[in-house]
Image (tube, rainbow, N blue to C red; front, side, top):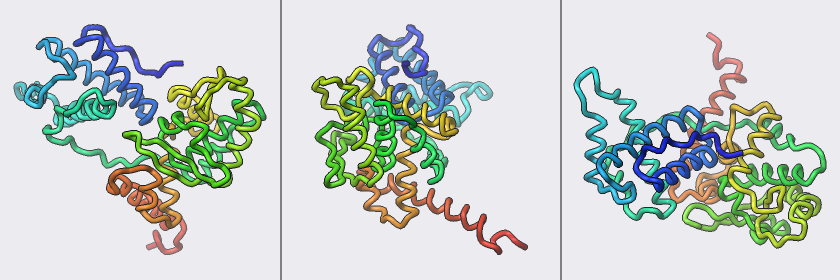
Length: 317
């Protein structure tokens, strides 16, 4: 089943823009786990941008910073009472910055025309994180002894054990797993490789999958991918999303998580357990430790929640 993103209307700049927009929206849904409302907002904002380009015979790939600045100014223009709300302008510029960041990550552009735009207000909302009981409920969701059950159990255990991105999970190959040493090799953004430890539960789940699941799925085909679909081919991000969401429903967590939620939970639980920030940064594959620091704020909030729930004099007068 394809992503839930609605196909854009044809009246935009080009077929190439349509393709880039759909790929971007699929990334936001499957990799970032954004809500339907957010996806629709990004879609609307970028369709507006596509129509703007079409009207001026501009190419999204070749837009200059000056042309981008002119578009940003156009968003903010208008008579009092008819201008877009400040929050709406911030959202639309945020959509543009995210879109071009994605194009650069996919190596479709070299220079980002939004680099000189004023940064939109950053959301202070912290990432959604499961507590340890909820993680256990999710990881215990796959029941039975079918090949797909062994695969799903291994996938969920690996995602939580290693804090992998969805793209990293489906990119794993057979040679990336060393269950004897308890290590996994992940390929992150920019194809950068990192080594992440595997816990005993993940090693056990992988072992079961390799013995009793994967051979029945690949049926002797020479497939390099570690995780495969029911046809024996490499699992896609869309397939992974369906697996995670299916077990989230079973565990009563449907509205609480996406594949990225296990990554957030991995980092938060490590820090709450005393792991140092640099080690978590290394395991997550973050280039900048500042990206990892959001989890320290999250852990601090959780500590406060526990404190006020359990300390006998925390709330008494």
